[in-house]
Image (cartoon, rainbow, N blue to C red):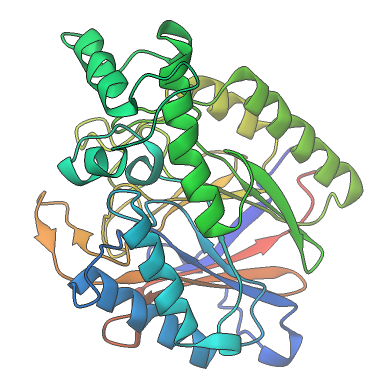
Length: 353
C-alpha cells in the first residue's frame, strides 16, 4: 500500500503520534523561506524596514543555513531603484547572511501597470527600432476586453522583447538565469519555477518548463529516493493553501491541472508558494492531499492578509530544519522576533511503500 512520503506527527492542527522532540545536534541542514517582500525605492518604507528586520533575524539565527529561498515579488514594480534597495539591505549584514535564491513574482516580471515602470522604459527600443513604451501601450490596447493578457505568441515579437527586458532585470539583480532553474545545496534539490508570460497576476508554465520539471524530479528521486525535494513557485495551486481557495481568488497557475497531476507522481516534493500574503495562523496554511506532496503558504515579509479579507500589518516567513528522519517547519514573526506557536509542523519522512 502506498502512503504519504511526509507524515505529520505534530502540528498546530494534528497530533497523530507521540511528539518527536528535535535534537539540534542531529540536524542535517536548514534553510529559510520568505516571499512577497515588495521592496520600494524608499529606504524608509515599511516594506523595506520589514526586510531589514527579516534579514537581521536570519543573520543571527541561521548562519549555518543552506540559503534564504524567496518565493517571488521581490520588488513592488521591478524597477532598478527597488533592486538597488535589495542590494543595500543585504550589504547591511554581509557575510552573516546566507545566500538568497529567488523565483520571480508577478510584481517583478508581470504586466506593467504603474507609471513608474513606464518611465523606466523611456529611451528603450525594440530591435525593430520601435519605442518600448509605445509597444506596451499597443499591447494593452489589444488586450482590452479580454479576461487576461494575450500570450507572447499572440503578439508581435517586440513585445516579447519587453518581457525579456523585465525578466533580464530580475535575473541580473537576483543572480539567477532564466525563468526557472535548479540548485543542489547540502545534498538536497531545490527547484525554482516561474512564469513565462507577462501576465498581470497569474503564472504561465510552458510545456517545456513542465517537462523540465518532470525530468529534474525524476532524476532527484532516482538518485536519492528517500530525500525530500523542495520546490518554489510564486502563485499557489487552486484550492490548496490559504488564500488559494476558489472563493478567496488568489490561486493563479494557468496550468493548474497539469502541475497538480505531475506533482502527484512525486510525493517527495515540498512546495512553498507566496502571492496570497495570508497570515500563517490561517486555516489551510499547510495542504497535503492523500499520498501527495506537501504545500505551504509562505505568507509575506511586506504585509499580511486575513481570512476576513483584510490587510494586516506584519512580517512572516519560515525556518525549515531537516533531520535524519524528520522535517520541522516553523513560522517566524520577523517584526516581533518571535516564533509562531500556531504555525509549527513536524513531519516524519521516508519511503512511500
